[in-house]
Length: 161
Image 1: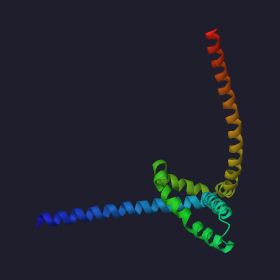
Image 2 (image 1 turned 135 degrees about the vertical axis):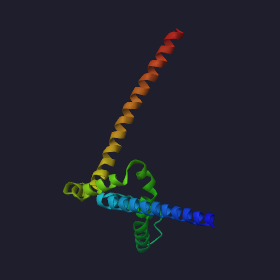
Image 3 (image 1 turned 90 degrees about the vertical axis):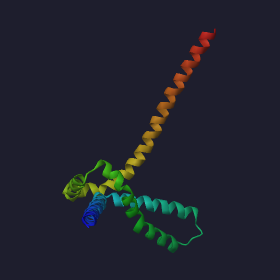
Image 4 (image 1 turned 60 degrees about the horizontal axis):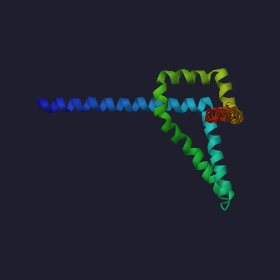
């Protein structure tokens, strides 16, 4: 009898711990959703989803516009939420719930609100600048590699003479 009571108590304590962990996860997840919305990340991801849909629309032009708008609406309604849920473990690795609280405070401030409005634009423009920078760096690396190859070739030719 004593054993059954102890076992029952342990099961109860375990279930409380499991529920507390679920609640903690849900709280973290809810805060991450809030942070994404406040930070403008949702808008950035919406533009990415729209881009994917637009590419598919160009490649599959046999579907009419209303079908594409239905597809777009469905994905905008669910895919970003799905992404955030998938990102929870990544964010948990680097940010505590307190960190999220601080970010939410920031994004609720005047400068945070300003930043969240312009962040998608900055991101978009930064991608374009990054592409241009990548071309410059690629060219510079290739020039150095070709010089090193030429130097090595010249040195090996001089050794054989």
